[in-house]
Image 1 (cartoon, rainbow, N blue to C red):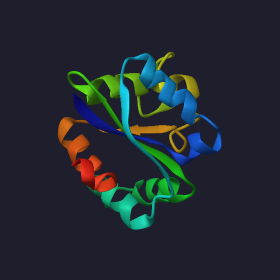
Image 2: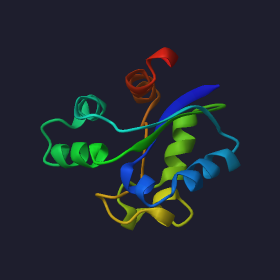
Image 3: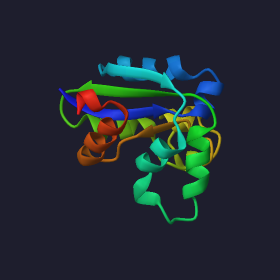
Length: 136
């Protein structure tokens, strides 16, 4: 089984969408291997988004991720799980996300786009180590 990291972001938690998001993964025969409902601190958010440091949107994504609790998940399945999850999530910009994707159906705008999923196998490994070091 291959694993990837998913964060159901604070905007989705505030809207009561955690169950909907998890159900979509389970319907796709993916399994939640680990889950933690947590308030992500600024240092962890900056480490998570480190590749974006210095970009104009960096501070706003850190603020968004730390504003209230998030549900952090490790999702596993056969094959390239990160690719399956990213396809299910849809385009980063909800206005471009296809209907049927999580963002296409549930997201409001770029600042409230419901979910994060690792964008490669390497990112999945790095991100799992940040949030679930015992699984890395």
